[in-house]
Length: 202
Image (spheres, rainbow, N blue to C red):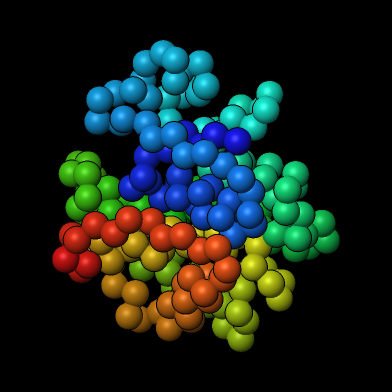
């Protein structure tokens, strides 16, 4: 399986992280975003939207990191995606959260400091605070976001939350969130996303 990725993308990292945690054999293919490789052929044949990550798994070519997590879990690591109706719905809730509040909060804040994207830093920090408070409340009295073991919900959340300080978003007020990050980092097979010395991480 090939993972077409950009090393500093949290969306790409969550796919790479999941493969490492579950032992899915894969090859990393770096895409030159600065050179516009993702907006040209042959990459556009893989994903007409021109975005990473994209995986090639036999005849299956899939984009969108959360969709990829669902596919990989269902095919290779079903214990990471429970079939209980309530727990599966809870996981979908956190995938929507990752694509919504997490993208508009910690991800956007980091885009500003790491890549110079012209977004509103105060708005990104405000959304980040709301998102992290939500996660903190969800983790009250529990070790994992859904059920009693790690799932793709935890993987989808990890990368941008762990690197939130790079976007000037402090994790100090959120002890349960920080504890969850540590639990994920202690899982066998964990692989980190490269750190960038900017923001509060400078």
